[in-house]
Amino acid sequence: MTVGGNIPDFRALPDQLAAYSVQIFAEYGLRDPDLVVSGTGLSMEDFVAKILLDYTERRIKYDPSKGELIALLGKALKRDVHDALERKRSHLREENRDVTPALSGEKGVVEKALDGLPHPDPPVDALFDEQEYKDRVRAALSAEPDLVDLADTVFELNIYKRNEQAEFLGITTQELDNRKRKLRRRLIEYGFFAASRKQ
Amino acid sequence: MNKKPSIEERLSRLNKLSEGLFGGAEEIDHDEARDLLRTAGIDADRIADAVYARLYKRAQEYWMVQKPLPPLLKKAIEDLRPSTASPRNEKEMATQAKSRIERVVEESRHPHAWMQSTTPEFRPSAYRGKKKLSKKDESALDEIAKRLNDKLKGPQGS
Image (cartoon, rainbow over all chains, first blue to last red; front, side, top):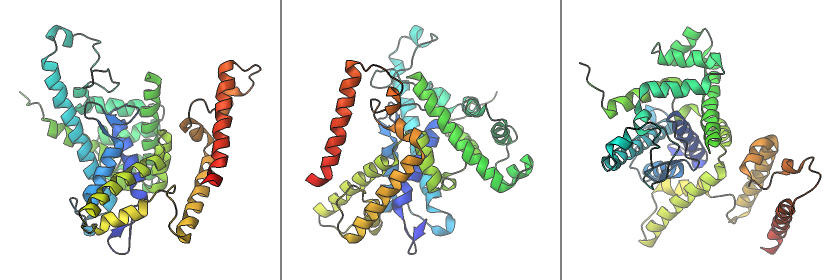
């Protein structure tokens, strides 16, 4: 959303970016109740504020001919979350060098955050595992067959384009958009209710 | 033998799946964003205020060295000025009043989400059908009554 040429209306951006980061956290099974990537100390607010600062100070440059501003900022935000996850992974790798091999190989050993406290996130290598990712998403949608079908068009049939997905499922693109809205909601409900159940 | 994909390759693949299934940030409009944040039990106003505070802090650094604010930063600070900040003119006062009313109406439409976002002791439903109040209940209710009284006195005092 932009007003007066290329100057955007900033009022909706924090909400949209925050909601998008909640979705990303849920996709990766990150269940920290304060929405912090454990081991990095970076919170959802940090990610959103950094992206907006990068944009307002022109470290992120926006070209309106290449799509919506929110799309560009969303991509940058996701990249930052990925970077944080990679940092978390390498920190944990460093830490694990100090752990007795017999212990680290045992089942049921809880992965520790850098602050030494157990955290509820999945084991760090599972974060980047394609099958684990698919299983996490499917678990969130399991009660709704039409959403599982939608997930399978992407996961099993590699259909990524919106109009092709609608055609394959025999629905309109508007109905597809409604299903995607429902999908995002279910993912977040599942992610956050699962988190509260675990506490 | 298959080479194990690098982290970058794995992230790129996950990103492709994510974009294909959920779409990008542009597919979440403002109404849906508020709804998703509510679903996750997150107070959108708190996020907006925290983001504003970070941008304002950065703006102060420009002011300290007497450098002009980048136009986008200036616009962001104007747009994200919290509704709780003192109004600078009549127009702002009207805008703040409007958004406060909208928030109250919004909360009344989603009482369940509102109850979840309030502090645990402030759950009126917890007392529904309760015949006898414990000492703990009584002190929680006294505390709530005190807080409500303070809130009522607040605007007059300031």
